[in-house]
Image (cartoon, rainbow, N blue to C red):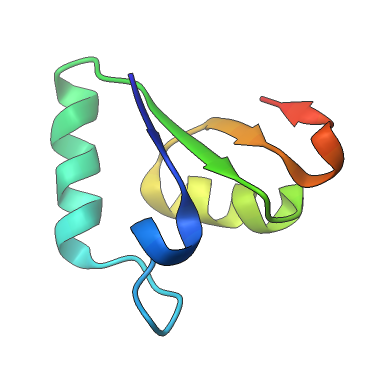
Length: 68
């Protein structure tokens, strides 16, 4: 399992996910490595990036409410 933050870690300075990162996540999934987005962003924002990365696990620390 890999837990990764969005801001300052996964996203570039413009707030985008690189094609290299998307490919790396795809390869990890092929090896049954779970990717978990761990973020303090609101859940709706985290879900947007989760769909882009095809990672459907989110640990959302916004208001300490959601683990999906």
